[in-house]
Length: 152
Image (tube, rainbow, N blue to C red; front, side, top):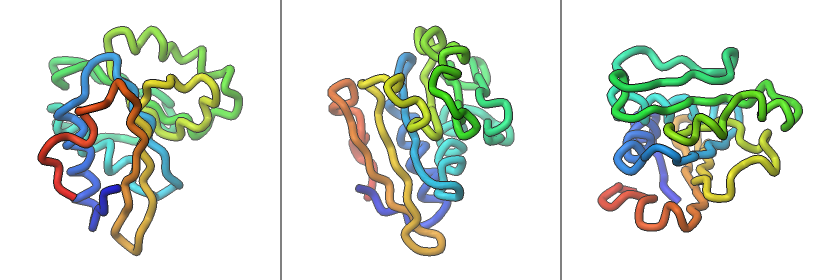
């Protein structure tokens, strides 16, 4: 568990993930509305080299990023508006995973389709500005998450 005292610390947690992320990785990012998922994603994307405004993919569902704007291809996915896990197959996430990392908000909407080797992160409010970051790191993430030297 990591205590994130404010939005900057939440973004820094995303930036820490950028140091160990590689193509083929899946990060399942859970939390209620307003928990800080988009702040975390912004920290990750900026640390990967993206210089623009990071929108939430709530309406497009998928926003792909690729070099040269990032150091590695990444799909930012928001499944909030998905009601049926069968709709997810149409998004092409399996194919994208072949050469891109996937950051998936609202991964619980995937049900059985969520890969067992996904890093599962959960952000929960802990006061007005603070958050708690917890995770389940499968074997594929051993030694990578949390990154060495990551404070908290």
